[in-house]
Image (tube, rainbow, N blue to C red; front, side, top):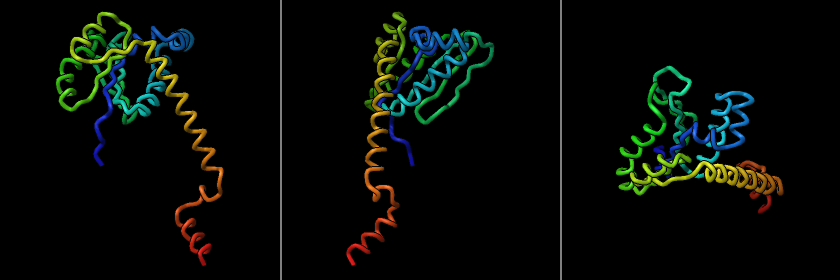
Amino acid sequence: MARSLAQAALLVDGYNIIGAWSSLQQTCNRLGLEAARLELAEALTDYSAFQGFSTQLIFDAQYRNSPGNCEVLTQNLAVYYTEFGQTADTYIEKICALSCQNLRKFQQRMIVATSDRAQQLMVVGYGAEWMSAQKLAAEVVSTASLVRQKQKISKKSRHSYLANSLDPAAKKRLEQLRRG
């Protein structure tokens, strides 16, 4: 079955976010940059799925002397590492320049998450929306809380009645027995 268009395309400047979120800075200081990258990717996995965003988490070639590559983590999240010498900023600008025209045609939003002021001005100029690192952090936390609440409600409602835990065939058979 073909996947429907995502509600929005979200581009995340990975190192900018790591530098702006205190929790990721602490992880980076304690466990290293790779651990901070993984923690950010995990946070964006649930957020992107819940929001219906097609998210690209972009890291520039800092600390890597290798060709650029893409790792698709989930249906909603891919991690991009730019080419050696290319910054995440130039990669994001290029995506905005190439995509914003098509996104408007399909009535899809493009959001760029970064606290880099120059980057903000550039992407807004292309027609993308801008989200600060702090706003993204607040939305990720809020979404995680909503997901936990929905899971609690779902668990309570499923376990409230024995019939809710039965498979459809068993429910049908019990209904037949009840009616005689």
